[in-house]
Image (cartoon, rainbow, N blue to C red):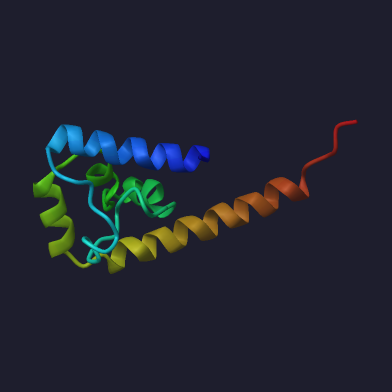
Length: 102
């Protein structure tokens, strides 16, 4: 069993112990797909704009989930795009000025 498989099984077991219900899967939650079965790198960046499912992936917060799903996320994803562009530009600038250590 790989590390990722062990981590996945542990996450599902802990979810069931805490909630008394089986852990959600992508098939059971297609509207959000924020489960241990999926990787969502952008949720950390979207947290800077307070629009993310990060909180829901850490614990059960039905009020936040309902709020998040009830609002259009388009402006937040536009902000994410701007952040990614800034990070990309910063990366280029940092590489252009970098020197190799020998």
